[in-house]
Amino acid sequence: MKEYNTLDDFDVRHKTVLLRVDINCPLKKDTLEIEDDNRIRQIVPTVRELLSKHAKVVILAHQGRPGDWDFIPLDRHAAVLSKHLGKEVRYVDDLTGEKAINAIRELQSGEAIILKNVRELTYEQEKKSPEEHAKSELVTVLAPIVDLYVNDAFAASHRAHCSLVGFPAVLPSAAGRLMEKELSALKKLFENPAKPSVFVLGGAKVADIVAVVSRLISKKIATMVILVGLSANAFLKARGVDLGKRNEDALSAGLSQEDLEAAKKLLEEKGEQILLPHDVAIEVDGRRRELLVGDLPSEYPILDIGKASIEKFVKVIHNAKTVFMSGPAGMIEKKEFLLGTKELLTAMASSHAYTVIGGGHTVGVAESLKLADRLSYVSTGGGALETFLMGKPLPAVEALKAAVNRKL
Image (tube, rainbow, N blue to C red):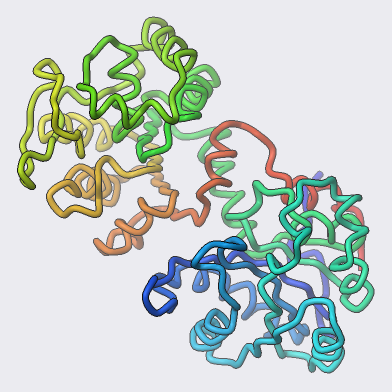
């Protein structure tokens, strides 16, 4: 029995479809223009299919968080989406008022509008059950004037927000094409990956890294886990390596003593499945310099993996049948320390394995290096991907599953 509905399960002709997407994009701080429109491009197939099937499409989305500099209206997003669609998507600066209601009722088949930033609503980000969110003004006003709810916001699916879980509690609901594609790719990756399977984990967040590595190995998902970035530094410290005060201070915010003990135990029990760098790149007077892990500690910041580690990791990737990477290997903002991330992604792109990457920084590098199209799948998820890695349920997906028997 299927877990959730998709667009294949509904006839949307002349129906009003409420489409929740995640087009939360990086912006240029000086102009507030959209810097990277990847997430907008990713929803185009779903929007285009709905319009081609003569649906009336009402788009709900967010940008930034209230109080943050990138919390802006969605008129720019509407313009970029219109450009990629080759068809106007009109911006309506309202959510539950008369202006929004009239715009929805006046929609013709094959037309689309995008409503105001949904995070303008104070209750949007409250963590409540789907049933509680269904009682909100957003749901009680919009649900009666639409026919179907479609969620294509995989990147936000780890959040139990009103616009993500409230509508499936009262409306026929389906996964959009991007959501469907994401879940299918991750299912292939995590449920029965072709072996040997290699997971490359890096980036700057280390709070959950021990639990993620433990799960990947204990559930026999990963044959080998390669750690880079701060994740590698955390496990090197757990192994007893003195990184130097500056580098250990960089870890302290996200890594507890309990985490370190757990990492130490994991290395003792499953160390043969965990690959750590044996050389690193530090920054000395603005220049890249490499040294062996055995030559640590260093007063200088560790900003990348070294060339010997790159060579070793690339060989492992080339021998794998499944490779996943999330999080860069170094400080990619500095050209000299992009090397590790670049070489690992290049190895993935030239391999014959099923290759998947995720996380905004990793995806950004792959796109800038023109490698993204050579990978099997590029996920839009950041926090959602981390939640999936942890083996935790995604509230927005669970809401779709709960609505599987609700028909138009």
